[in-house]
Length: 153
Image 1 (spheres, rainbow, N blue to C red):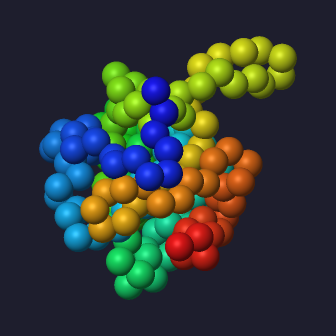
Image 2: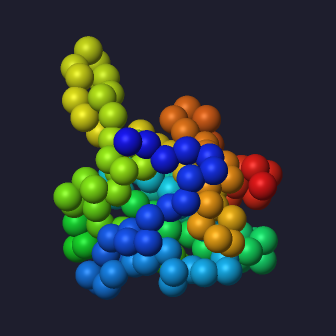
């Protein structure tokens, strides 16, 4: 199953870098930018996270909260957040439930080898948690992602 524009995000989103539950209702009345990324501390993922960090106040002024999601552990997320001073939570989807629900856990190919992994995707929601826009794959500009989100509204 994959979520699409017009679908409501699930209430249970997982646990953050501290092991605390993250729920859609925590963000009631706020728009969300939920971005799925392959791996902490890799070049593209770091560029994307830092773009969102640098544009965080502009995103908040536009009514957005940011949630990052990868299949990395809570400990990995804590290190990533500390290393890059990220002001938003990262969901540790180690059981791959959220990536599968959103449809971003897909077969990928690198150097002729096929494997399952997270396709870089950002879902934007309205204040009621309904998906309004999706940026996926090569469409995501990792170095300018905050500006890209603000232009996608």
